[in-house]
Image (tube, rainbow, N blue to C red):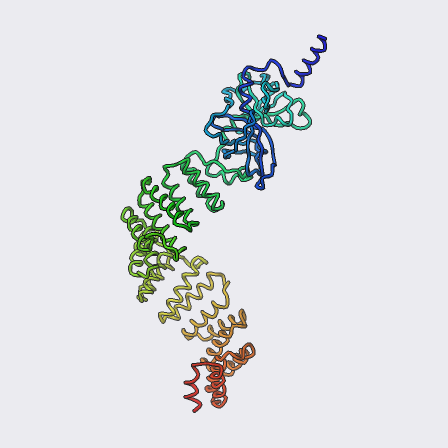
Length: 566
């Protein structure tokens, strides 16, 4: 009988599992270990595993693979109580560890203290599996050796048999302090060897400003914690603003304000984000409340006034048919004036100019834009804005001078950035009777866009060339427009006009004949044909053409009939 008992004891020691003489701390610490169940977006269970608490307020550690592709996860503790995983605090797929927060409803949980010293080689250690039974089984093994990873952390190799369901359980020292997270060994040595990732490394995991570029984190759908400092958290908010859905980003802002309740920037950002979906007075009141809170908290009142002005102005542009309280452009101007009084920044003047421009107060808009143009924020766009105000005030020379300043912001050879301004100055010059100079701008535009233009451009430049009396250019441009869009009869009519202008009446008739094949009901064909016939002294045919144009409803041809056909 004694020999049989001795054999059983030897087998137990060889397996590394024990059921007797448990450490004194086992019953207490086993409550720190729990089971994890992870679900996908459809609610289907996709992974199960283990984890354990390292703080009494619910911070926990587990293996990363349990959370990969999960949209939701819960834990079940040793008493069978279920709790939700609230947020991810950090993750590292390479070392298969994740740190997370469990929602514990304000009650403390049993947590394993972190070992202050790393166990040395040949030290006896224990593995605590998840169990709902008091005095459940545990494993005993020894540290074989530790390798340094990630600078100052250890990756342990242990002489300890690890069952599949024990992966991600805590490895503790003789005092019940956790030093590592158990990780599975290869199939070849799974009966004798397992590994452990330093729990201090797992505890060091955190989310920083650049964490949303971390593929490991992105594969977990559970919400993520914010960085610990307000500066890093604000940087993260900025970086992910275009990557998250409205709902996800608003949740992140709400989390930010819970963590940093005295951040004026947070309230300003939430006000701006909420404005995009504000369709009711109730939601707009929330926007107002955030602005009011930001004003109380901010050390820069000007920035808050600027944001309020911008929000009011933006709302009016999006929802002009749904006014809110006293929100008008005049109200927005009052707010931006407060900002300018606090700090006359050029960007505030720019917004004021835009507001006044929208109200057709061009003189006031010019005064604001001029402030920008005399600052370090002067740009091609700001000079262009000022030029438009002068044009609408019918101060042509001033408008053109400002357009010259606009173009001067670029150096030739011009690129696509300068192209729209070149085209606009060309238009202004043409309307001012400076068609030859306008033609130069159109040519520069053509080069700036690497000749990638459409039929409308050729038509526009052809008209400028015609007014500049550069007839061959006009002929060439109208021909290009027709080649690109042969069905547009206006181009053919203009080509016929230029041909007549240079005495090529037979060529004009050929152009008009081609136009007639496309649409014989286009009355302008017959009016122009009549003019060509007049030039050729073929008055009878001219009158037939004029009458045909009249028959098709051309109102301009009657004067020609009166002059040449009566």
